[in-house]
Image 1 (spheres, rainbow, N blue to C red):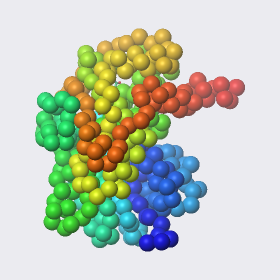
Image 2 (cartoon, protein in one colour):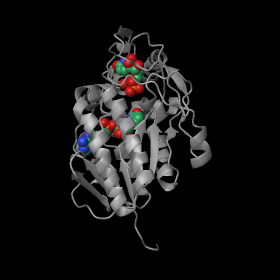
Image 3 (tube, protein in one colour):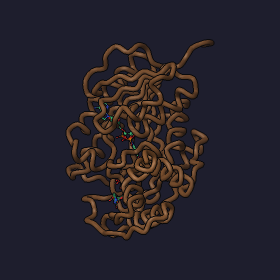
Image 4 (cartoon, protein in one colour):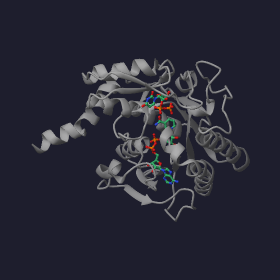
Length: 323
Ligand code: NAD
Ligand code: UDP
């Protein structure tokens, strides 16, 4: 429709990924409503968006029915704790965000005839027995272990999304996001990238959990967000893996971060996490083929940008700025 400004709802819009997504959508000319209860983030993340035309921030817990917010063309559901220490601290809230929260977002998408995009996760594959992980793999999840509050919430969210697609004709899409990093992660969120950067910036020991031989594949946030918007713009149902297949061991990553910071930190081995996935790497053939999407920022460049952002906000930098 000529002159129509796309209206987009982003739940979890103040979070790490959500704030970058809101920014990209505004840059593309959309009107954006971010819904967040600040369970794992602070409004600071969207401070620079608050004055922008077309942006609105609504404080609301997505496990409660949404207030009247007008009509939407697209609904992105990102609201959920995502860092292991966060979801282990908020187990019931995490299950409720994945279940009730997803139901409220799907109801809204159905009422509006909107495109719905679920931010699912590589954690639906659990500790995978297949490597790299294609979307056809059903996963290997401990349904009652501590991580299950997150893994099973997302698996339920995927099931509910598919049921709304089949039974109600909602135009749904499921993105399985793999480890994403970049500016605006919380220094204390406990995930490996911000933890190692904060430790390296203060020359503290790098806390590598378990043997450090376990792997992850890191995707820079701009690439992940571009994958999410590409999925929204398509009619593909997914699930589709959004991640960077550049696999690295946790120990090697710690050393790379230390060297990029120029720190003298030692490596300190700490207890491994329960049910920690040992190898994780996305097969992104489907995203390449169906969405024309692939990551473009390599790890060295992504880490450089991320370290620069954290360094500018580190206590040392603040002392220098006020000296
Ligand atoms: P984050 O913790 O920075 O952001 C999540 C946001 O959701 C926060 O702002 C939080 O306050 C909000 N939120 C949580 N519960 C809520 C509720 N009940 N009502 C309203 N808001 C609520 O995490 P993130 O890394 O930005 O992750 C965003 C989404 O992407 C999550 O759904 C996560 O599962 C998914 N994901 C992220 C990654 C990653 O590596 N960052 C990987 C896979 C999947
Ligand atoms: N990890 C680590 N030291 C830390 C934080 C995490 O060695 O200070 C490990 C963690 O045990 C896991 C990997 O790094 O094996 C990735 O953890 P993260 O929390 O970043 O993401 P996820 O486990 O959700 O993939």
